[in-house]
Length: 101
Length: 167
Image (tube, rainbow over all chains, first blue to last red):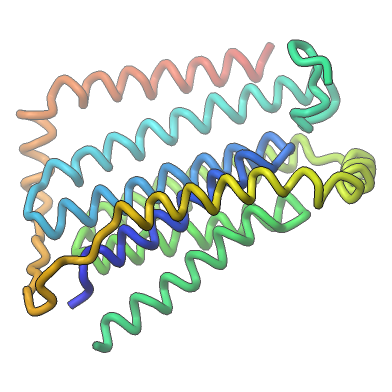
């Protein structure tokens, strides 16, 4: 039997990788991918607690979380395509409308 | 014992694919690593006896999100831009990575301090399995309002994405 805290370990490691990616990447699509990694690691946590504690609410929350993540990435990618059309780049450090460095 | 070994093999694969998403230079490669990552998350759901969520994960993420990401990469990925970017990236790499790396390590150590293994190692765990009908009844009774709200959110997101992309 796999102890439940193993899932928490792997989820923490994946969340850290996602955070590192969000902090370091400059490509907009890659930042969205790292956000997806973070969301999925949180979902692993929820499902692990739900299965080990015998409470179905955690898995229901994961269903809604998946739907929200799909909506988020649809809008995010549309915004990125729009940015590419106006700026000819998706390097977010060079999209200097608000930030000037 | 065997299931723990299986777990660590899958954990190794999922960590390697997540690192691949972050570190690979081509955006298309990281999109494919992300597909592997999503499939491995579904494998973890199967290990946790959540087969319905594993199916949803494969359908929505590997089927839908990866397709969208690949289309976005194709629409935005220019050759000239990639060359200029990689040249600029090599100059700043080591200096700019230090602070995020330190912050990530501190973050991981903080979480490692929070996660405690159970005190009694002889305790036996039981994994709960939920039938699909239970999800259906929960969705239409307890979670009726969030269910309708999420359908509205999805509709608004789709319309918003179309309006943004057609502008």
